[in-house]
Image: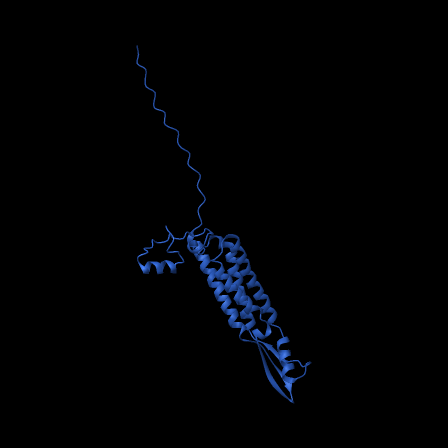
Length: 223
């Protein structure tokens, strides 16, 4: 009887490779976008506040046969850029205190502050109302108008600052969901705190009685 030849062992089926999981966003990219937004927003707000205090328009008014030089600062022309710059600074701080939908709203507010600053600064770059009012006050004539009106480059500097704020807001809208938020260790969750159990009071020790009274406890109550 002939021997039966052994069959070669069947190799076990190869396990299919698991599909690659989507790569998590690199924390370095989130940090870079956060740093860029903070730098752009703070630099832009500072530039707007600085430019708003500078002279935007110059001219002269005729008074008694002579001329008087007149000047108008950015705050005289319009208070919108400086107000929006303060709003932008507050929004930059609020980005760390809010999450999810709140952060989206704050990011949109930051972007709108930048866009509004650009628009107000560009409109103020050709404004003459502020100097006309100054001419009317100087001459005592309500119909007086400023002569030789010229504008400086400071309105354009304010517009550039507003553009930086707008870019910071767009970065926050795009990458803000990946940025860290304020630690929640100090936040209250609404759960009432448990008061510690009152310490035992020895009626024979007057200092214990006084301490119990200071804590608002009745030292005569039995435990």
